[in-house]
Length: 81
View 1 (cartoon, rainbow, N blue to C red):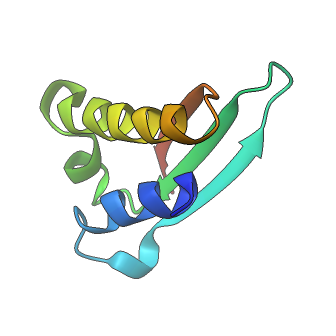
View 2 (view 1 turned 45 degrees about the vertical axis):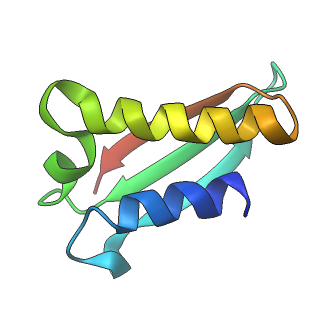
């Protein structure tokens, strides 16, 4: 499972409207990976969580998976549309 698929799976389990989730991967200049997560504005609270706890948990899981595979740093941006 790729990092994008893992992130998409984690986010889709948290939201009601699964079709409104968009996850894209970008390579950055500093050889890290940026994953952009877009969710509906009504669902953003479910993904970020109180105090950002859920978002930080998602980041931790995806970063751990990256370290097991190719050892690249991963940044995840969560935004609404």
